[in-house]
Amino acid sequence: MALKEAATAVREKAYAPYSRFKVGAALRGADGNVYAGCNVENVASPEGTCAEAGAIAAMVAGGETRITEAYVIAESPAPVPPCGGCRQKLAEFADGDVVVTMATTGGLEKRMTVAELLPGAFGREHME
Ligand code: THU
Figure 1: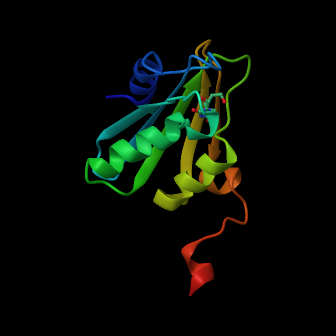
Figure 2: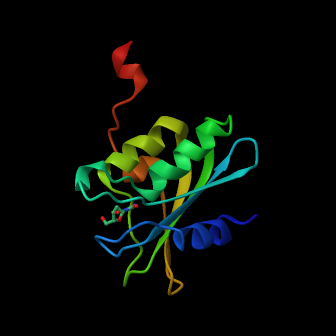
Figure 3: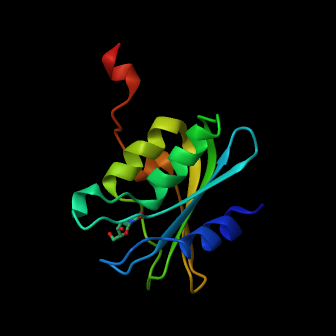
């Protein structure tokens, strides 16, 4: 399945009663499978989770830990970039050259690599 299609479909399932801002994310794993997630908000707002985090959880639960491609979609005038925390979460499972496509439901797309989204990332090499 195409990432765009998966992210668009899962976005409809987002639980976003507080922000009313639905986000869908889809990841291609190194296994070739597509893993999707949506944002899930909570009345205690810090407890909400982003679409990217949901997709990563689905991927890991599916037995995959490497991302080869990512797609994030929201209804917005401009492509929505992953939040800071999600950039770090993506960097945990994706090499720096992995492309993240940020899209709007209106058809705009912007592509950036994980390294561009998180320059100077803290990585496991810093703990060696
Ligand atoms: N959100 C995501 O799910 N992913 C992003 O990349 C940006 C923001 C969600 C979190 C929250 O539920 C809503 O969008 C508004 O911040």
